[in-house]
Length: 121
Image (cartoon, rainbow, N blue to C red):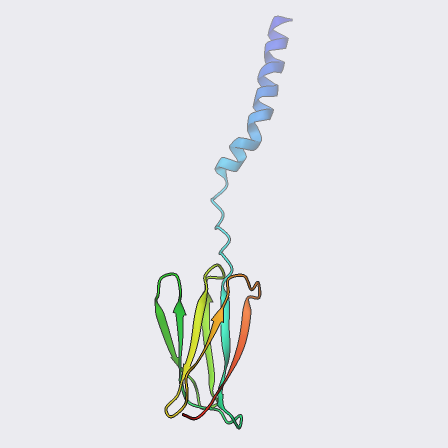
């Protein structure tokens, strides 16, 4: 009887360890990538005509600046942004007053669209 009891205990221990051993044998799963934010938009003049401009994106935490030249339709695009960081977006065009907008980490939208209507100096 003592041997039967020992076998049952061994069997119960093996069954309890099996799921852990199975997890250890599985290949490591890739970590889920953190979501990123996208900021895009248009730069135009007061008459809504597209402007070729430079749009700067400044990380207010690290002070890193990325620049983008708008296309012929005045469009710009920044991707891969950390949603937990505040940014400043600034549109600059020759002969126009620059305009700045703030991207807040409190805004939970993952895709933001800004239109900059620049006025003549």
